[in-house]
Image (cartoon, rainbow, N blue to C red; front, side, top):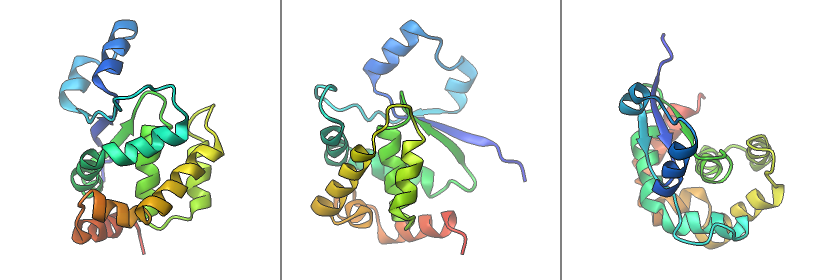
Length: 166
């Protein structure tokens, strides 16, 4: 079976993309036209706030985007393989992947260890604070995705089925 990438989910916002294109060569046109899907997770706030508050803001402000990612991309990942990234790969991408792994019942210690591998300046207390917020304010990943992002139980179960080998 060929393992071809179908999508590249780029979580950067419009302002970041403008700066990135100005200072670097972004994707070439063929990749951009055929693979890149921009799902901006760019909070409308000062980005110099503590990471714990930034991660909480992602949970508060991006339910629709999370729902889209889970319904359209994670659910179909066996046939539509994807890459997901933002600028550094630890904050927005880290939150999305932590939500997915938590939904899949991966042990938190493993999720945290994976997060810590994502970028040189990651801090354990940032992802731990994210999980504290997720648990204490939203009742965990499954409840957050159901109650706040309106992801159906059927979709969550299907994601679990396709991504976890029994």
